[in-house]
Length: 234
Image 1: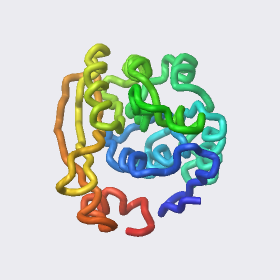
Image 2 (image 1 turned 180 degrees about the horizontal axis):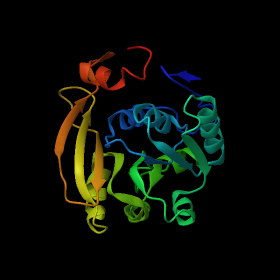
Image 3 (image 1 turned 30 degrees about the horizontal axis):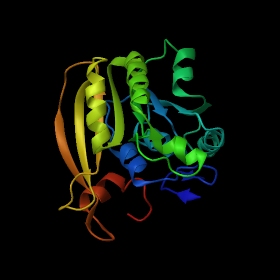
Image 4 (image 1 turned 90 degrees about the horizontal axis):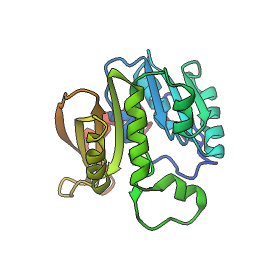
């Protein structure tokens, strides 16, 4: 059990455990008081729970294709104080949105499978969780573009090389880059992840930088500020 300040997350049945990518997306994705939120590929449910904490007026639909992970996430939601606002669904996101075509979201987030055309990792669950191809992002972007409200935002966290591919794909669905955050491990490191947001309007705001460590085992003030409302170590 992973204990946060306002909720706990059981991750025993999930192939992909709580990791830096997920918590950074949960902490850094911005929206203006969103009322409707979707977390695609919720896994343990940690991102959905972080968003429930950050956005008290938001109702979150958390979608997960893996049966064991979906059951675990739903249990985590029910055991949290946000149970009335967070609902888990055991479905692929395509099926979920096809069943709910009129539902529009102010905020959609996803920490998706992201290694395009790379070697498959051992273990079927982990392979599904970490690997994909460009067609996946075509489907993800075309689907979410239809489900966003006029002012809605789609937030993703991706390796830099994948992010650049996804930004090109997004243009074909009239999704415009709104925000980009370059994530690096140390001040002298090259970015290894992008957190990116897309919108349906040309409303680019910024490219920013985010550094996790000052030195080994010492978090930056920037990281602490982002996670202090969640992690018990701060």
